Image (cartoon, rainbow over all chains, first blue to last red; front, side, top):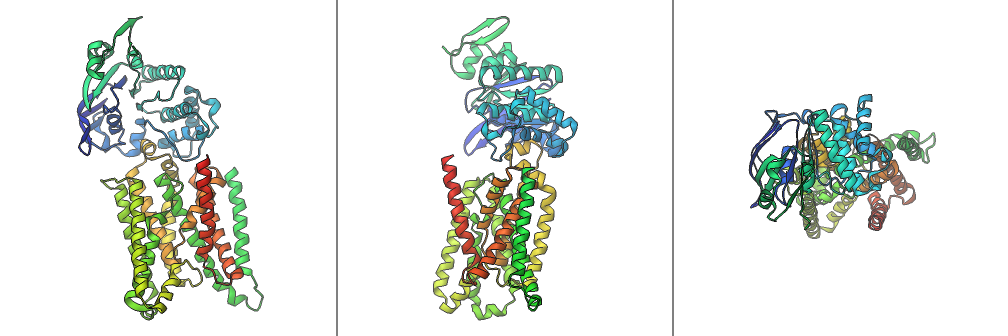
Length: 251
Length: 316
C-alpha cells in the first residue's frame, strides 16, 4: 500500500500540488486523470522521489525517504514522461540497466531472462540491438517501459506510458498492465490522458484538478457525466456497452 | 569488442609517442643527462593528460551534456587572476623567492573553493539549473579575466613578461616535488573513481532514471563534481590552463569507442589525451624549438575540432 499524507508542492507562488492525502490499495491498477497542469505528474514524481515536496509518503507503512536508495529501487520503479537519453546505447543495453539495482552491471542468467521477457512483452525483440537514436518516438517509449518492467518491482509508477504509441501498442500495454496486477500481484499507478483506457482497465481512478484531489473511487463512481464535468469542466456523455463505460468526448 | 580493439591500438600509439619522446637524439654519451629530465616531463604530461580526460568525462556525464568542459566554469581565468595578483602584490623578484609550493597551494585551494561554490548553486536546495550556473561561471570567468588584464596594464612591463609566461600551459619547467604532490592527489581521485565507474554509466541515463534505478543522486553527483573541481584545479595549477584538451579527447573517445561504458570510455580518453600531450610537447621541442607554447597548439587543433563538432551537430 502507498499512503500519501498532505502532499504539497509549489514553485514560487504557484501551487502545483495542494494538500493531497490518499492511499493506494496494494495489488491494484490505479489511474490518475485530470487536465494538463492538474498536478498528476508532480504528485507521481513526489512518490517516486524525483521531486522534493512537503508531506508524508509511505510505502507499506514506512516513509519512502527512510529506504536505502538501492533497496527502494527493488520495490518501486518509475517511468517519467520524457525519456531523452544522451548516451549512445542499444535497446538491450538500456533494458539491462533495469537490473542494475540487483546485479549492478554484472548480470546473471536470471537477469538476462527477465530482460528478454521485458523485451518480448514490449514487442521489441527484433529491435534489441538497434541504437536508441535510430528508433521512432513510440519505440523509444516502449524501450523505456521495458526497462521499468525488467526492474521487476512490486510497485510501478508510470507517467503517461501511452505517449507516442499507436492504438495497437496502447491496448497491448494496458492489457499487459492488467495482467501484471492480476497474475503477478503488482501495484501500478499510471497517469493517462485517454479516459476510456482509464475506464476500461483500472480498478481505481484518482482525479485531480488545479493541484487538488477531486475524485477517488472505482470506475463506476468516477466515470459519469456529472463527475467528469467537475474534473474537466466540459459536458461528456457516457455510453455503456458490454458492461463498460465509454466517454464520448470527441463531439 | 570494438572498444577493446580501439584501446589496444591507442596503447600502441601511446607507447610509440613515449619512445619517440624519450629517445629522440639520445646517444650513449648523453643518455644519463636526457633520460631523467625527459622522464619527469613525461610523468607530468601523462598525469595532466589523464586528469583532464577524467575530469571532462565525469563533468559531461554528470551534466548530461557532450559539449561542455570544466574550463567553462572560469577556472582558467581565475588561475590567470591569481598569477597576476601574486606578481602585482609581491613583484616578480619576490615571486622567485617565495616558495613555489605556497603559490601552488594557494592556487589549488582558491580554485577548488570557487568551483565548489559554483557547484553548490547547481546542487544545493536552491537549484539554479545547469544553464544559469554555466552562465554564472562564464560571467565570473570574464570578470576575473577583466580584472587580470586591468592589473596587467598597471604593472611594470618587465614584470608583465613574468605573468605572460604563466598565461600559457607549459611543461618545460615542471617542479619535481610539486609533481609528486599532484600525483598523490590524482592517485587519490582515481582510486575514488574506479569503483564508481558503474555509477557513472547509470548517471549518463539522466537524473530521473538514475534515481529510479537506486542511485543516491544528490550524494553521487556532488562527489563527482568535487572530484572534477580537484582534478581541474590541480592540473591547472601544475602546468597552466589546458582544460580545453578535455573536450577534444572525450568527444573523440566517444566517437571512436562507440559505447556508453565508462569502463571503456575512461581508458580510451586517457590514452588519447596523454598521446596528444606527448606528441604536442614533442612538436614544441623539436619542430618549434620551444617558440610556441603547447596550449596554442592544443587550442588551435581543439578549436578546429570544436567548430566541426558544432557544424556536424547542426546538420544532423
